[in-house]
Length: 502
Image (cartoon, rainbow, N blue to C red; front, top):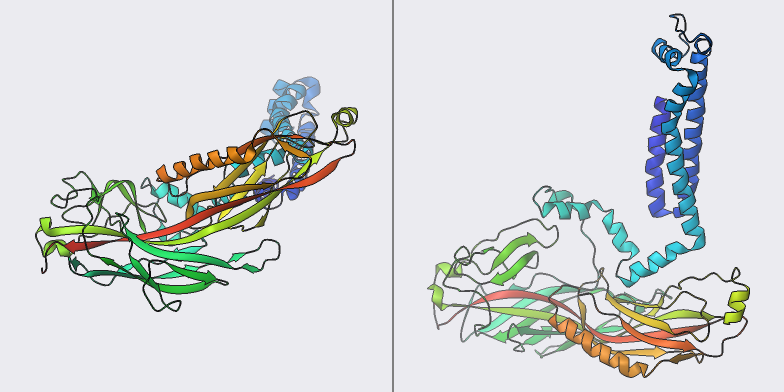
């Protein structure tokens, strides 16, 4: 029995792993596990039978009856073989019944295609296979647990690899500035090229760089190796993975809309130390300035990667000048994909209602999955409708979901247009383009008001009917193009002395 238990546990572990990696192997391993349990049960019952064979006739136990152990033989003799058999086999019956439900349920879900409905709905909600793999990553749970101070092991935490435009921490060329100085910020940027999903070749894209402060004053930026002069915007052509360096210059004037009080400490403002200029820190609350730190957090200051609570050190400038003479300015460095286009298509299959009713067993109603055909990477453009095949005289929804991809830095900053290229046998209810434009305005307003890192955007929808439906199954393609601006930001905080000299 010891070996059987070890083998059974090993199989259960293999079943869990196979279900994640290769679902078909799951059913094979479940069958093996079921076979082992049956063999174990038969072996156990045969031993029980030999133990109770002589005692079952007389109903008495003798010390000489030791077939399955003296104690087992005594129990069998007292209870009777049938009662003992029922108690011993009930737990095995329950286990076999439970495994049978899992095997049959898994077979039913897989071969009827019902799992595809859940997959499509998950994709529409922004849940992908990559997200599910993250759920099984040790780093994910380390990050979650460390937020509550119950698990801290940053050395062993695996970093989630993101793609796109990746800024290093911007650096100020000086520790502080006077009013007549030019603020100078520099830093490094890595840009990942975007690949075509069909050919796996690199797509040619353009990224526009700019810088501004927290009051939307525009600065000038220089991309080394791209141009020789400072400009308000610099465009970089990306044909391969590349690394660049930038410099931003702005006038030194303290911002008036920075929250907090530079004459009061973090503690006096009921906040904790946290440097907003450090991209590795995140405030779960509201940022404020103070007299003893560059920035404080009304909430909890945590590590942006692990979620572990952190603290930062105070400003050197605050030790040199009177607190009321210190001002602050936040400098933002922006990288933007302007008018980026993502295209996806969806297969629409139809058959006449008479044919569908007559041969309903022939046509399996299922939800078709979207195929991204161009500009895949920054976002995921999903399309869905009713379960297919569709028939005439029924209004069906066409739902378009544009989702910020979790694997890429940045987010959609503005949706410019949604275009639909439909086949001739689709007729929209009302003016679909006008309706989509109205929905775009609502979503853009949603984007402007959201403070989330990657806000979930409302889907777009038009209703349609099918025309020219035939008795023979016919499929065509509807293609959706989404044109949008996509922005990646980083920031740093500089200190300004409101006089000529310190």
